[in-house]
Length: 159
Image 1 (cartoon, helix red, strand yellow):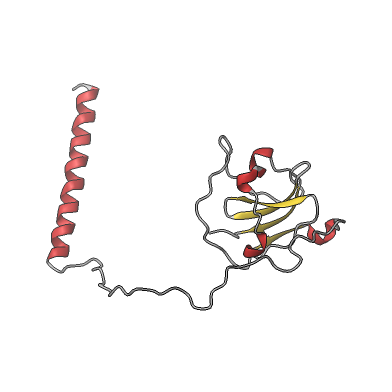
Image 2 (spheres, rainbow, N blue to C red):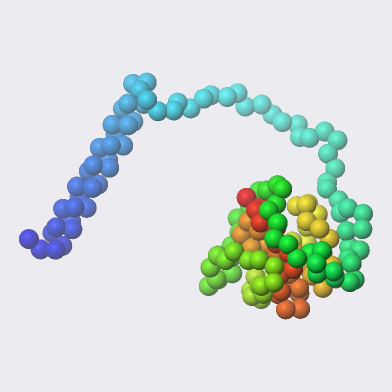
């Protein structure tokens, strides 16, 4: 028996078993058997929030401290809250890494699309002059824009 023929037979068998299982599950649902039944909900129009005002920059949002007291910032925190803001796409060719303060973030990670300009919306502190918040996956990193040194990390800011 050739290798190609054996592979074809295995593939056909797996396909038939999968189709059979799917058909059996569908028939079971049609008969009212096990499996979650979708709950029908009435759809209502939503007028939108009342009294809503766009979130604005907090007072002093750009009054960045001119002097950096490293002892104040050097922490790896777990964020108190997570925010859903959309997918994250790591720079091409890089893999996930668990960053910590004191490490140096490669330049590809602090390109314009990763900078968190509206940091206050995510409960992040005002960065000192020469530093920016950037996103890496679910984390926010406070980095030096001179060399990428990580000054502070907030793990789990983004879900």
